[in-house]
Length: 436
Image 1 (cartoon, helix red, strand yellow):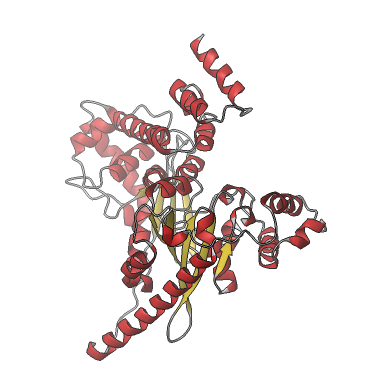
Image 2 (cartoon, one colour; image 1 turned 45 degrees about the horizontal axis):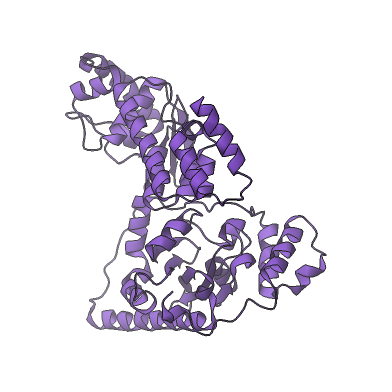
């Protein structure tokens, strides 16, 4: 751990880790009168109670509120985008500092998560990734969410987290305000080992938040001095978001959400295959190529009448998706839950990705293009977990169909378990059955 984060560490407030864990279990179990709870820091105990009242799960994964395209567009427009270089310079001068720095918006959604690559890989398993919602309402007590809830800087030590998945980590966070209106803009968080929640860390994070607010004010004043009078702008309608759900489903669901409405349409197996191939091949494909993806060689003639029928369905349910021709292509990008899964893997959110995996892509389809994409998704999931996932995530993968009979997965999980882990016997027995 770099010296920046490690000097003059104080122990967690007057309570041992075991006391805090026991008090947490009593509160979760409904015994709010247990005397140990009274010994917990009031800030933490109050946050635990808010988490319980909000029905937050003690092992809940955070929701991913922003997909890749939404995240990129939102980051570009967010007021804190222009100060990220300052945040990096103040909090991440050393790429191997042993901590990660997250910057989120006022709703608790993480927009940037950067820093030590090893820590990022480990925290990604609990969903601490860009786009995820880390408000108290989503994951309970944590430095970023609780700092936003209280509108003040907060430190949360290990077992003080409401969510058990987060308890190996400690964190310090401070809110950031608009320098003129004092409106809450977001939060800056440092997460790592125990040294990420020292008095020194809190001073540094608080100072960074104040420096950011000062930089925002300076930039705003400079802009006003050089900017011409604003022109009138017209309101642009928020576009509809459309998702094709194909994981574990033979008949895909097409979900369309817009201003004040949401529709869900179950597609036929053939229409699901065609729409998935158009979503995968966004640049467009010829009739012959699309026909081969669906029917095999020589399928070009068969695809045309099916596309006519698909167009009629889409004209009623999602007119913005009606395919163009020459080449066949979708006029707007279509997100799928399979692409969303791959995005989670790319962000290092292995546990969240595994939770989002509902099964193989259109599992009963024999369309050549679908079979190829199904295998790509399967391999991407397996390889990401084998190369980067924690033992808990590997064990969870071994409990689903894809991993249950995978000897390499079982062997790797066995090698990662402690020598006295009670889970070792079950893995050994499963491996022996596979080898028999």
